[in-house]
Picture (cartoon, helix red, strand yellow):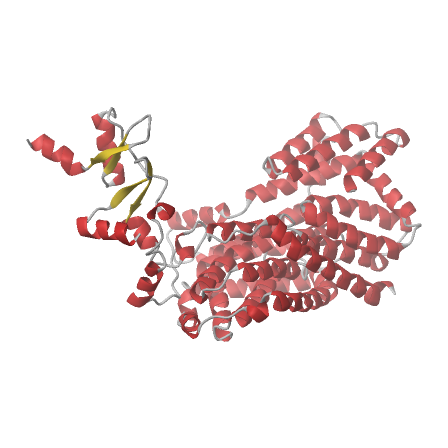
Length: 455
Length: 130
């Protein structure tokens, strides 16, 4: 749908915008980039960087304009959080949380499913979703093997919980990082206050069908439960001294996110400073060679392909913006909705959700942000009046990721684990279960937006 | 599986070749796979939990895990990634393969994949001494 719009708009822009004769070319590069990324036949960072290069080589953008198009707040925030995670995961805290959850549930499978889902949601709200599932899913598989129950409902619920939890904060999911970094005036606290309540309601509602379909039939023998109860959570903590340092720095970073806004401290500054401080603290009593080696190791854990995917994407989106395509797309949206902000907010919610279930939500949101900025300008909305549009985009894009197995990177990571564990998750089986739940969550958000902002 | 484990233990082999009905080599089963069956599966998977510090197993837990595989056909759990030599493989290359694998090597017909025999480092050392 977005692709059709871009094609229509490129046609209009090439004729109507005299100053932007490259609209066709820019639209073509953008569409080709989008299509190849969607095909999943090439590495997405590779494709985005090549498309970014083409935007410059074809003189749609100068190199300076391309560099200016990269949002270094997003890039810095991602790298900073990845560094913090890289150090923190060495402590075993995430295994500790998962094993403690199993203990707290006294080995009861449904209780474990519920608590592991909550751990996943909370962790996803603070870390990115891929990292969260990489840390929680292996422990889940160890637990379900001991319980001798199918891991599918556990993994299914964790996929959903990671995307729901990620929707709750500015740093929880790439769409929110993009929105929080690129839309001035939206703070960490604004995301919490406006999105966390919706995420909480969706989370609670999601567990109802999961209980009806799987939870009430989950049983484990007394012997199997005893085996899980024999796990010793505190043994999972491999470096208690480092854990203390991590918890202190993470607390400082979160405080920095909350109070930094309005004081000129963007999330990127806070996260990168936190990452640097934590690496320094984790190395205090080591020799310089070892310090160098460990810092090298921590930087090695930064997902550079994701970072360069963002860099390429920002330049590609800057290209179609420069060519006047996004301005026309904004005008088209405003015209189509008859200038009604509420209609646009609902449309953004549903279209983002459906689109994010079938395409990568990062390029979608990266394209929608400048488009919606144009809509806000066309409608002459103030920052506060525009907020519901951003919350619609965030909730739609984050929760839409639950619509299918390819809806979010975390989903595919979990599927990979399931495959290796000998319990593959089939695309259609997952779709049958996840798509209705995703639609339910978007319906809840629709009502939430109506009650809180649009009634 | 129980029979294959019996052969490994009785003969103290590190591994044995697994063949299909026609005698074609399809994999290798050895102590590496045997040890893997005794621990939770996620401990040996890529991106899994290599240490499992919170798991406190006793001998009965290891036995219980191993028992799950006892009646399974060994072909299902044979490792597919293994070294072989052929009758015409140069001796130096064979010695280097023995050096890298620390294990006996299956000798396989290059064309048909038939298992022809097994060569051990002792075979070579004994021939040298004689």
